[in-house]
Image (tube, rainbow, N blue to C red; front, side):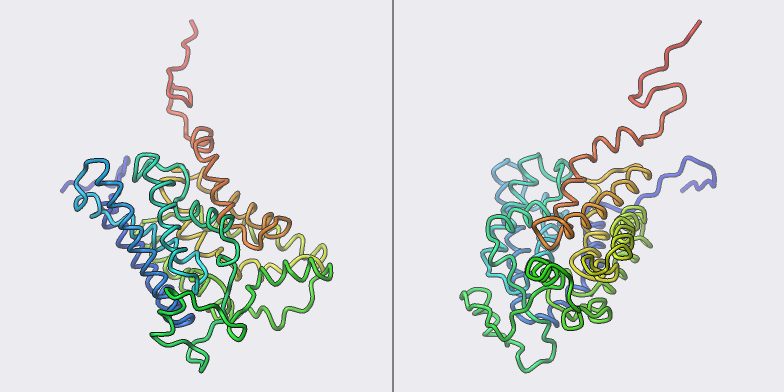
Length: 352
């Protein structure tokens, strides 16, 4: 192989299947931690969502008259199901995973032509559709109960996921962002958050939330590993985190009685999963460096706006989808102009 230190350079990061493998490998630590934190129901929901995503993908491929085994080998459906599962309440019933994977694979991916053709992130389309259509099961959170006497066993976990066993009051809990939204609506200002938020618990994941909110630290480590292997760049994640942090600092300094602190916004919800694993989807995000930075900042700013003034406590999914919608525009306005041509690629007019 010929190697040259001079431009142009092209770095291959592997086949689609290899990329999917690396992304899923980066998700393993945070996923295992969520199983330990939320117990067997979280595992069963994750498994059902992944398998049903692969199943819906196989059905679509078969209907299209293509080879199922060959097309499933890229494992993109498994990754979509995995990311969707991480955005769901850990004790949600099995049908949430099945319906969600149908929306993600069939309606948000295959309808547009399959892998590489979808304009919106499939997992986030499914999460938003589920949240709007089934608000009750999508907003039932449980306490983090690792090694607790209240932790559920194997058979009870099956009953919760597949048998419709309700979440009992003893383990039900509000998420940090949901609790803030509720208290602001109830008394008009933020009370003390001592019982609802501590930075270290939120950082390592010992709090109520979705599977993907389990551990910001482990999500960060997985994201850094992906950067090390050149699967994702730094601009979108850093831009998204900054897009949340900057307005959070400004409004908290302006009025801390009505606006949550930057730490609350940075360590709560699905921000870290969104920054490193959702917003960085190469299909629905910009490919130019400037576009990625603008896109990430937009995702973060919209997340903060929706959390603070919107109708839902969490805004990551909505923010990513809104920025997906303007990705083509960002691509056009940030693509470097080739010398002698316009941004559209047409030759410049030669003046006599």
